[in-house]
Length: 417
Length: 151
Image (cartoon, rainbow over all chains, first blue to last red; front, top):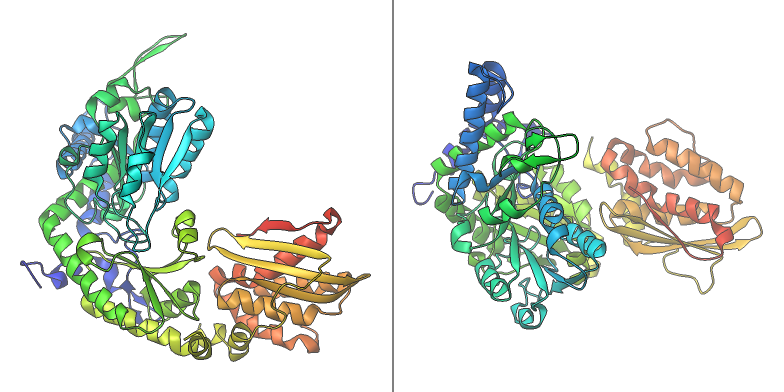
């Protein structure tokens, strides 16, 4: 316990942490994939469906007004959480992927043309890579890559040649979902703006884990997912600067996003409604608001502090494991709570399988980062990721599990040393 | 389901000391299979003698289950005719999908993979080399290396 952060008290708020797997207590170390949910978020879903389920922005009756108020209240909460200048800059979508694709369609097609350039990094998740590959192909633009060094950091020197007056967009992750690296996005935004480029930040792995201030960062777009920040699946967020949203064309056409519909043409509602066609994911948006409340109660500085100390503890322990290769920076201050590794003689799938027999949940695979895997010449890695509810005892269990995997694969491990 | 049902000694032996691994100087059939979901890759090479598979070799990167399955496959299929390969492949697939099948005696090594059927996420690992070979045999007329993505 530190700074008044009581991890045991936090754990009490997460019913799933009492679950047993193979008769053993669950050790959940895959929050980078999706986080667990506190009771307050689960209650919020039940409360909506039990007490005030109604469509939003439509009905002139009490329930609809209640639902609309709660839905818009969640938008205001999310805006405050990332210090957006107003709730109108917050668009609710399904997930980070949809947020990025919204920018691709609603902004990209009008602003990226032949011979223009889009700059992304080699460490991007496929969700912040494939949409730009498609846009570049559609528009005849060039997709450029900022490379990653052996330590897992962006080679920022490359920016001098990679950013040009043809750069229309720089799309970069705030925190890598494989390496854990925290990228200096503020500096990248500054350099991009100097050349007139916009900057999109994939904040899927940062907003849940540390304070994020979009005005301080000065990014033009920021995307993240609710389900990685203790909220439900099915709701994600796109933040964009107000003047951009105003200029952008609609994403999907349909109900709710119009002002006036005539037979030959229509006019659009203002943002955010312009980008939220159809009945939105009301229950999950409201529950995301509850997740934001919960995170605010914990305090994002304390969440970050807790994960920092846990990551330091994990790195110290992993360093002692013979035959283990860790990816990403060794200094916990410059990384999030995501630790990827490979073991000599044991494939990541087999590590994950053996850890599962101890009720430890980690991820094994390419983590939707195939270019990054090739960069490090591996087909897959094992990845453990931490959140506010994880403990040092769980890191100990992970290390014991790794040793067990090495025992099961004894001969293969010995031969590879 | 116990871990021992998955990682039987015989599987670990094949993983640690694979049989028939490496590309032969000449192959009549070359097929590569990949599982884009997990990044595993396997290449299967066949030297034909008429209708018979004179030699089956493999290479690649993958987990213990996929590499052990490839090693076992290369052993049991050596010298078999294409029709026999199809029969054995069908039996193996049925076994991986949890069916109770009787394998020919000389193929009892394959029995060791029976436990994989209890780990649904790993069944595709055990089938990767088999599916790749099947694809290679089906497309051999093309006369060049064929690729398949399995998931």
